[in-house]
Length: 205
Image (cartoon, rainbow, N blue to C red; front, side):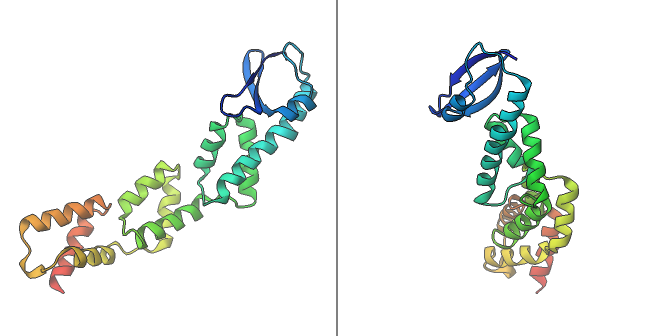
């Protein structure tokens, strides 16, 4: 393996991109670059490459991931995307993900359960919107559906509460006002059937 280029990174002047055989291999801080005595044109042995990957790159990736999840819960996909954006290779990312999953630092089911309760209870969002956003975060349909089932969310009750806030006089509601409220609830992520059933309950009570 030939070190064909060593380039200073634009966003971090103390960090360098190492290219092996004209392909990006990994990034190193200036201290590590000097410690491992890497120079353009030199041949990098497999043994030295493995040492760098195991001792430096894996450690860097692990630090990036743990810092990323320290602020709030993250999904499996979000952590992978973060590591990819930092230029880490697939093997290193896999090793980091295995470590995080082993100690339950990332758990898509727990994330989905927490997200559903927060968005439903605090933001009064419907399950259609919640499911859509969870899928964008890379969580599977199976995990989402299991989390919804365990969360025991009652969409009808939530809609009735929203109707009570939005409709001032349910005995004298116009078609225009009713359509506006229905469209508002649809945008919140509730199904038409749930809205219709909740509306009838609201009107009858």
